[in-house]
Length: 395
Image (cartoon, rainbow, N blue to C red; front, side, top):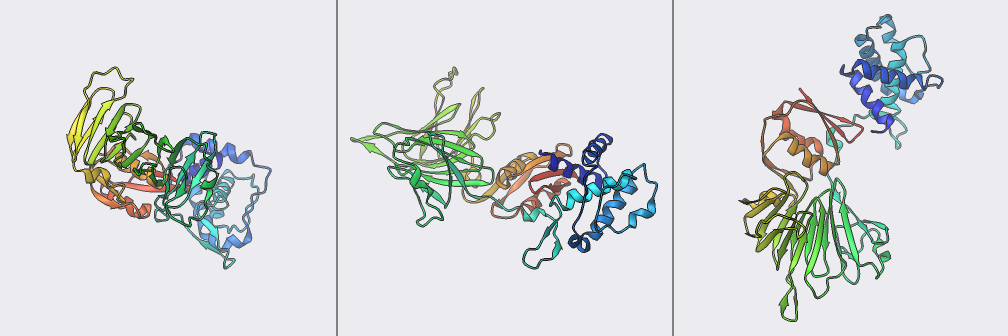
C-alpha cells in the first residue's frame, strides 16, 4: 500500500471509530512531518464539502480523550491552514485533506465548473473486459486490443479494424508467444492450427507462433483456460495436442475441455465438455499414478498427493467462458476470490470465517455492488477504499 493510500485508510478508520492508539500515533507522525506546510482546501470546495468537514471534526472530537473545546467543532472551514494549538484540529484537518484533496470523496465537474458531492460506491466498480498482454522473446510487450488475436505466419486481430493495429511490429522472427491476462481481463486466442483458447482473468499461456508437423504442445503457466482443439493431420497421421502445466500433461486429438490451476493447494482441475482427454502427471514427476482417460462430464483434480476422478456438470466449471460466475457450495472467501480477479480488487477481511455456503449463477457483466448482493445473508458488509481495496466487515 503506498503512503497516501495508507493514510487514507487510517483516516477512514478514525471516522468510523476503529482506529487503534498505535495507528493514531502513526497518523500523528505523518501529519507532524508536514507541519510547516499550509494545508489549503480551495474556496470552490467549501459549499459542497462543508457538511463533510463538520462531520469529520465532530467525529474526531467526540472520539478523542483530548476533547477540550467542544464549541470549536461547529466552526466553518473554507480554508484549512497549519494548526499547532490543538491536536484535534490538525487531526481533523489532515483527515479532511486526505478525503477531499486525495480524491476519495469528491471530484470537480469539468463541464459545469462546479464541485459536486460524489461518493465512490460499489456500483461504480465495473466488471472486467477483453484485455491481455502479448510478450515476445526479445522482451517486448504489446497491449492487445479487440476481442481476440489469430496467430500464424501473420499475427492479426480477429476483428477487422481494431482501434490500433500494433501487431505489425511482431516480426517474422518471433517464434514463441506468451499471452497474459491481468485481473479484470479475459481474452480469446486462435492458434495456428485453428485451436481456440479462452483465457480467464489472471492467466498466462505460452505457445509456438506456428505448429510444425510434429505433435502440438502449449504451456498453461497460470490461471485458467478453455480449449476447443482443432483436429490436425500430417501424412495421414493425426497430430496430438497437449496442454502442459507444472504438474500434469493433458493430451487430446480433438475435443473441448477446461484446465484450472488457480489454487496450487487444490491442484490442477481438468474438466471435459466434449470428446475425451488423457490426463497424466508431468514427465518430471516421481509418482507412479497411471494416466486417466476423461470423457464428457468427467473431471480430475491432480495434486502432489493423488489424482482424483469425479463426475460433474461441465456447465458449472465452464460458466466463466459463457459470462457467468457459478457457485456450488462455495464459501465467502471462495466467492470473493473470484470477484477479486474479475473486478481487480485487493480484499481484506475484518470478520471471522463464515460457515455460509453459496449456490447460484451471477452474470459477470454487472457492477461489483450487484454481484455482492448474493453475500448479504452472511452478515457481512463491504467498504471500498481507494477504488480497489474491498474491506469485508461484520455488520
